[in-house]
Length: 310
Ligand SMILES: C[S@@+](CC[C@H](N)C(=O)[O-])C[C@H]1O[C@@H](n2cnc3c(N)ncnc32)[C@H](O)[C@@H]1O
Image (cartoon, rainbow, N blue to C red; front, side, top):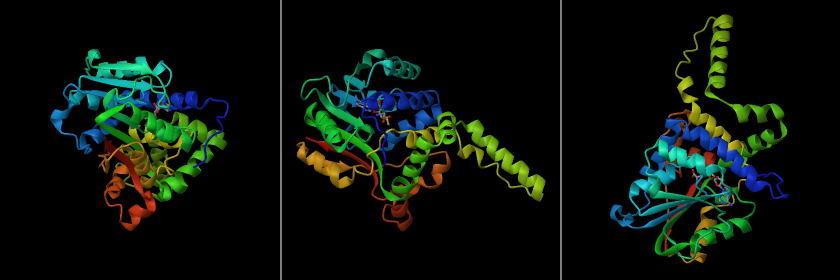
């Protein structure tokens, strides 16, 4: 996938700014927040419920809405630590967790990079680097970031890393084309940066009214609007605004090799069902049937995420 030229060192700031806005939308939209929270509730981490008591967890690259931190806090560990770039996210994440009734004593938030985590070796029983590594600058950085997460994971601890959809029509062709157009076309760039459900619903209204006027036909399109809500807008931004994207390079083989080289013996690829309410609900179940020819063509190697234990 093409990436922007951020050779002046601005990549971190750009990535953080892009996600700060997207995460604020998610923090302010209970449907989007809950959908993402439910991903973790429905995922099979393979960790016994009683394991968490007294444990220390790290969410490296936690972002500023906190669905995964909330999931971790609800498991009942002694402390959950969040790390991300810069400091402007800290107040926002604190507010999002406070709005969801989290006791501030249950977590800490620290500025830092996954390339140089500000913690001693083996500090945590559970480490997550969730949707972060694919946004780094190179495969060399991805290896370094992976090794940093592994370094702070204690013997016997769990290491969860998530990369995203890998290959297929969506990631090999459609999203790279949309990303390239976003970078070169000012109108599309502005549209994606400001897209709201209202704009999309208005377009549906125009189509319905125009069809009625010119063809005397009722399109029966009422079902369409609920398929294009806030969560869909954030999805568009998430996949189109990203400054870099190494999702296609982070294949199952590459990630399994990273776990092996960093000393993880038990490594399990996770598969999760995401309950969606927007247009994607018509496609999401195909993720569960990776060998179906349509799934294979659309999603290639599928969603890549693993949990390993030392
Ligand atoms: C797609 S968001 C994922 C956020 C969160 N982990 C989640 O799954 O909802 C990517 C996050 O990675 C963070 N990030 C990117 N590069 C990073 C780095 N070098 N160190 C720490 N965080 C980084 C971004 O600031 C952003 O919050």
